[in-house]
Image (tube, rainbow, N blue to C red; front, top):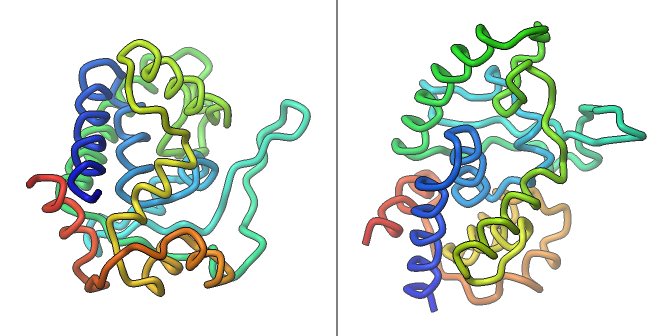
Amino acid sequence: MFTNTSFRIKGFLAVCKSELILRDQVLFHLLIYTGARKGELLALSWDDIDFEARTVRLFKTLFQDRGQFIIQTPKTRVSKRFISLDGNTLKLLKKWRIEQKNLNLAASGFIEGNNLVFSRDDGSPMRLAYPNEKLDILIKKHDLHRITIHGLRYTHASLFASIKEVQERLGHSDIQMTMNIYTHVTEYVKEQIAEKFQRYLDL
């Protein structure tokens, strides 16, 4: 089962690399490699990425209310967390940061101050529905295994086995919620989790 999951992840990421602009490649990469919610990723600012500590801080999430974008802190304490990042993910983020700056400079009416990792060219937040729409297009065009944005989050967890680690990494408030979904995972070392995830996909 794990080998099949790895194969599907690598195939999906290969399609992303060939089909998507860099921003969207990085977005789907992080969905898989961090297990973060899409609202958490769309709320990320560059201040949340610590390249030295090799972590991403997930302390907020993006909402849409009557066409307005709102960034709020999570309702539960456990939803606020730091996620370790592997070397390849950090390289991809650095590459995107450089390209994003160039795109922002060329955009008319650029909105200063947002500093979002994932934004439109003018600096404004992306729609919450955008990742779902893009994923559906890729699935239909390439006849990929059917999966949802939420499913990408579960795929990330299915490659690990420490239930407590999965709970912390995905920000579940109730460990029973984690147990109900991820009963098949095996033991994993927390401090090495990001690099091991990368090495697993490289097999």
